[in-house]
Image 1 (cartoon, rainbow, N blue to C red):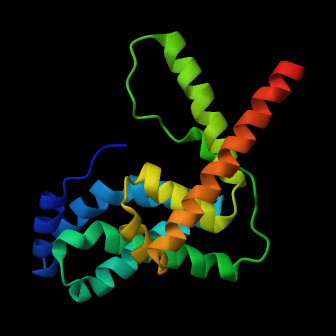
Image 2 (tube, one colour):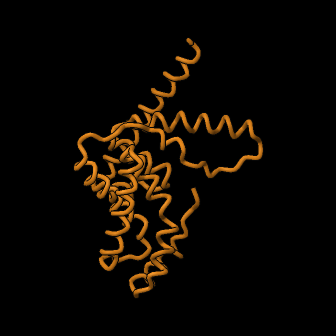
Image 3 (tube, rainbow, N blue to C red):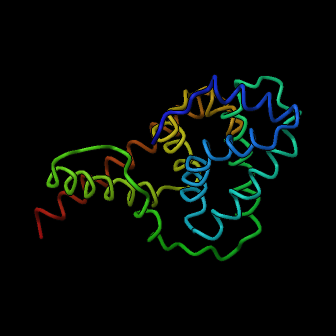
Length: 191
């Protein structure tokens, strides 16, 4: 995924606070993909993910004046995103667990060799399938750490838990992912 320019985002936040609706449209454009990706992984349902994204950006605009540090916009938006997903998931009792949309997320890496791209896609899909099976809290820390490139303390802020809990969840999630991937490889060799 494209790297976010935090200085540019901070300037857009200031302009939005000053009433520039075009600036918020640009913020939306710059952050939409990451918000949607995170929402989709948390909800495991495209329709719910779209609802989460919509409510996340509505809340962000509504409460933007409460953001004290414009440079912290992305972390603040992720916290809203996470809270919104939790709220919507609590409302939904029978969430569809179909993962078909998880595997249609575009890969932003570049490769000029088609075979390398096929192998990379297969490996990526295998990891995505394993991530999708993790419990909600473990899935969230993996996504924030490796897909949003966040530091442990930023994840702790978003998830409203101690840094030690984040580290513990990351270790547990990595262990579970490793076990799943090893089991899949063994199944291939046995089959």
